Length: 210
Image 1 (cartoon, rainbow, N blue to C red):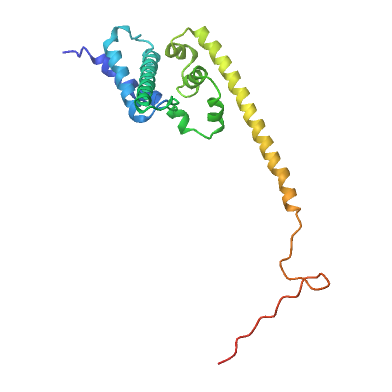
Image 2 (image 1 turned 90 degrees about the horizontal axis):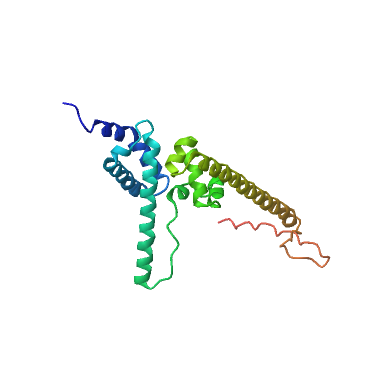
């Protein structure tokens, strides 16, 4: 007897790990597992809409929407908690994928870009999608995605150039400050004689023999 759900089982086996990695690059791993599970739950309910020739970018588009809902829910819960405690507004939780790479040159440059620019670059650079599949995942046309990718790459290049220039300037400033510190006159801590010269060091005292 043929398995009527065999196609969905193969879809799970082929792409679950990829969807999980997609989510884990953007949020903590525990929540990423929930995102992946919810994505395939949506896929099960809408399995008639899954394109048979290119299911993976379709799944990533679903995962992107599930992740966006999760982040909106987190922000709502934070605002509610802040109101209950009487605190002021709190900054949204940082993206876990960026946190993992914090301090890196690329991460610093990505941090200067908009969320849409970062997502466009991640779909191509991290998830390895071509323009067509990335456009499906992003929920836009290939032409629109290509324009977004071109602009995001241009902004990333400008951010990297600015970071490199600042790093070089800071290094030059530190190097210039070093000779000034080395040129300071060294003082002799030994007592001075009447002639102004340092007094000779006192001879070592030999302990008496018993």
